[in-house]
Image 1 (tube, helix red, strand yellow):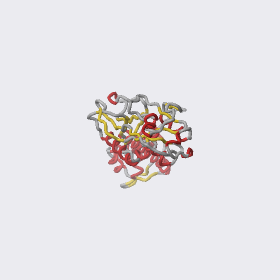
Image 2 (cartoon, rainbow, N blue to C red; image 1 turned 90 degrees about the vertical axis):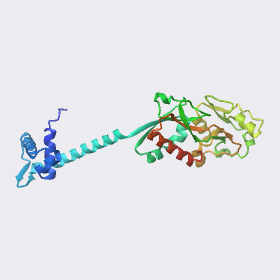
Image 3 (tube, rainbow, N blue to C red; image 1 turned 180 degrees about the vertical axis):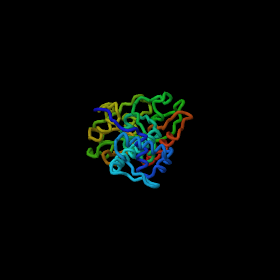
Image 4 (cartoon, rainbow, N blue to C red; image 1 turned 180 degrees about the horizontal axis):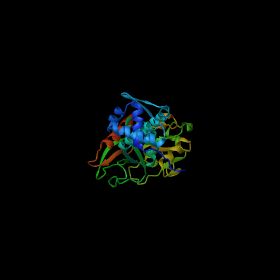
Amino acid sequence: MPGRRLPPLGALRAFEAAARLQSFKRAAEELSVTPTAISHQIRALEEQIGVRLFERQTRRVALTAAAERLYPVLRKGFDAFAEAIAELAVRSQRRALTLSATLSFTAKWLVPRVASFRQACPDLDLRLHASDDPVDLHAGVADAAIRYGRGPYPGLIAERLIENRFAPVCSPRLALTQPGDLRGQALLHSEWRHPTLDTPSWRAWCERAGLDGIDVEAGLRFTDESHAIQSAIAGHGVALLSLALIADDLAAGTLVQPFGPVLEGYPHWFVYREGELSDEVAALRDWLRVQAELTGAG
């Protein structure tokens, strides 16, 4: 495609302003030049395109038929320029931050709620960094993170966000009503990366429930907790899960908690670098607190 052969932009701007305002003087004021400069620009434009654009009259100018055809095209073009430039300026002023969390927490708790974040913080862009490996916030991988554990976290401020309670959950299709119904059911296990003596497990739950005769090591095992959740929803067995993490599934009825007891787990913490509570991080923290309270987990 051959290159465009267009008159100088300054001449086109002078013509558009003069045509819109129907005055060389007012066009000169708008463009911060002299009326003589506007006149010279338009005369040069007329010579280049070979047509007369204005009829000079006392204290005003009138558009010729050629100018009547050219003016709407230029007006739309300059309006489009102005709109695009304004949009770019707004985008350059947008703020952004990155929140890191585990794969399952991101998929089951954060992603379903991001629409409300956009409503609460329309000028802030949120990036979710999903990883089961704790990120180094001091290395700048993320601005803040959500971590499950006892704490504390050296070099970081940790604010309690979500209380975790673990209980057996399953599809309502299994029609379980009492702990003894676990006999004959497949147990679904989420494998913890760094288990401790306090880690919720089927062994600990059966001891709390006083239930014997169950092989607590048998069943299906998942390295990703969200896969255990999906397996439970599909009716493949009974999973021991954080009630906060599956709050949406419980509310929708795709999962039920048929019986207790309930095991206490560690909290989920909102963590960020010491001395770096920016306005963006504070806005994110406040939004997360609201969401935790709405799910009854705060």
